[in-house]
Length: 267
Image (cartoon, rainbow, N blue to C red; front, side):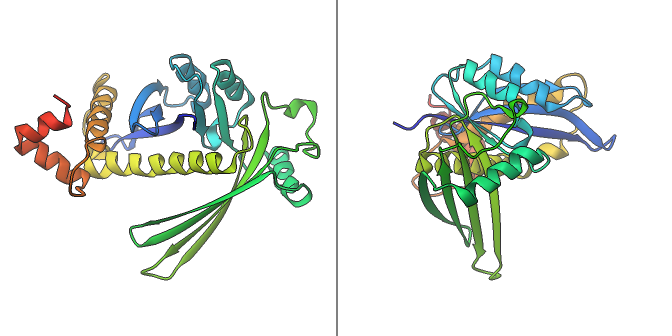
């Protein structure tokens, strides 16, 4: 049985009047349910790294796989996830030069433990994601200060995106560390869900709900409306229609039809 996937990301709500970010928000999403399960507001000049452990304290994530992008690649955060009886998949930052170079080097000198490839076709684009996992960390030459709690495997994700319309091809390679067992198919899926939620979330909040254009800045209004927007988004995303309907179409239909609104709210 595949573990539940939970991703943590940073969201900025922009204050156009003062030309600055109104609030910085770290949010946790349950990927399979399309639901925001927690969020923490950070001070404007503070580092989101300090907010992630505070957010983790509020969550019941036993048995989950927690995915965080490069901002969360910190030993303290890894330990906080393990303390909650969950596993982590953390993107390795290039500015963590020793860890990044050692992980990258490992894939040139050590035989892979597992490998999996998936292909997605969406909106005229074809994306291939190949995940290579290594669990033999014998030659991961890190000093004691670079010890990572619970580290079991490292993985390399190679993605190739082909745009059918333009003919353009983009290639990207990312490296991750994880406390999970070396199951390439599971890890590939976890990272895929992370970026799918990341891209869809920001698109929906900005384009469908026009969050960046909102003028709610007094007190906690921006935070409060962000919570309400995410609740509405979760209800709409989890509503299954016989015909494929856009988020904008669902909102319009819900506004006009009490029957459809009851369906969305599961009444």
